[in-house]
Each structure stands twice: as structure tokens, then as C-alpha cells.
Image 1 (cartoon, helix red, strand yellow):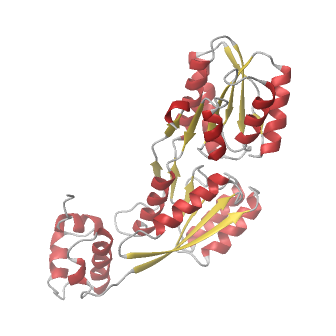
Image 2: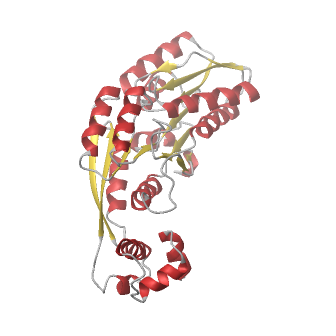
Image 3: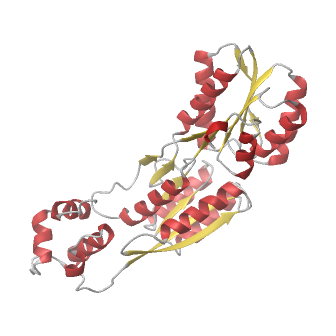
Length: 342
């Protein structure tokens, strides 16, 4: 059975001294109303036994308006992420998360910047997926000036202005993808890499890690010019068919962002399972089926439940004493899936 937090843990979480917690518990007037309220909120969040004494036994909850902006509402991955966020928001003790989920129709910086500004008017904290672009950085700076912190999800943006990043270590993700292809490719040849666009910071890091690993460990594998697929199935399929037609010595394909369905379809049409090593991101119904039939060699995935819980924890802790305002990086453990693990 887990040990209940003691007075020292409560004091540390609230950013006050043990003596201050003791004075608050004993109702002494030397503790300000603001400090007493902070300790009470922290006790409720920690499920500390002192919560009832601090709140007079009342069922008091703190309400936090959390705005989340995602992309591509029609994609299974983003629907799975939205579901994980809803589940996590409903499971926090002593805190009511008022979750507001919006989806951007595109990755256009102007559209996303406008949505962030609108969301700030009805949010205490924002978490978003976005490209790394000056228009979005300007929007984040404006929102921050209004007292609303913005956290980057999955792919970092507005570095120096955003409150933090939550997602995978994307440089490492790219190196793992290259490691997988280097093991599977028995002979020299060509390798193709797809990114969603020129402004996805996470894709830039994945590509850099991917190229660096192969340059060091498999210089006989020639990584071709990067292909931008705008994370769409059709563009990825057409580009993959073109590469397969022009390069019979294609050994591997890495789709660093969305659009993997197009690469899977092109390989099904032109190659035998496993003839070309395909590494993609995120476990969905389609990537799972492609793993089972061996058209996909490996899937690296984000632990969505853990990401959602981290976002909720940050929403609660932001603004508390001892929590940094800018620069936090929360790297989640990468989940690797192969045919025999699903």
C-alpha cells in the first residue's frame, strides 16, 4: 500500500515551510489567507489527510480552464490523443479541469496563431500542437503577457516563450528509426525520409538524428533528399510510388510525421512484405495491421495516457511556487512496436 504524504511532502509541494503548514493546520492568524488557500489546494491535489481540516470538511475544488489545440481532427491518432486528454481531465482529485478541445483545420501559422489568441480569452493554461514559426511565437508571447502559459505538445515551438514542451525526445526518435533500418538493410542502397513540413521542429530533429546515425554507422546507405508530404496520405503514396519506381535499390523508408498510410499503400502495391524496411510513427489501427502483415517493420509511439496525465499535472502546478515559468522539457518514454509485440 502506498504511503500517504506527510507534512514535509505537503510543504514541499506547496512551496512553503513545514512550520507554515503547521500554523495553517492549527488555525493561527500568522498565515495569510492566500497561503492558507494554496496549502489547502495542494492538500486536495495530493489527497493529503490534512485537506479536510484545511477546507473545513467541505468538498472544495479548484477549477482550471485548460485549452488544448490539436491538428487534423479526422486522424485516428489525434482522436486517440483527445480521448486520453478527456480521460485524464476527469480523474484528478480535488481539481476540476474544464477541458476545451479545439482542432486547427490546417498547419498554417496564421490560422493557428489566431486560434491561440482566441483560446487565451477562455483558458488559464493552453497546450497545443503547432509548427515553429514567427507568427506563432508572436501569438505565444502575447498570450503569455496576458498570464496564460502555453505548452508545446509532440513538436516544440516558440522556444523561449512557451512554458514547456511535452513529448518524445525527437532527436532520439530519429536515431532509433535509423538503427532499425540499419539492422534490416543487408546491402547498400537508398533510403527515403518524409517530413510533414518545413516548420515542424520535431520533424527537423527526427531527420537530423536519422541522418546522423546512418552517416556514422551505415555510410553505405544513401539518404536521399528529404520529401515533404504535408502529413497527407495521398502525397505520401504518390511520392513513395515515384521513389520505388526510380530506385530499385531502395532499402528503407522513414515517415517522420503523418501520412504513413500512403507509404503502406504504395509498398503493398509494388513490393513484397519486408522487401523495403518501413518505419512509421504512432500505433493506430492501420499501422497495427501493417505491422501484423509485415509491411511495416517498426512503429515508434507516444504514450498518450502518460502525455495526458503530464499535461494535467502541469496545468495544476503552473503558477505554484517553485515551478519554473519557461523552459521545462518533459520527455516521455518512447514505445517501440514490432510484429511480435502487438
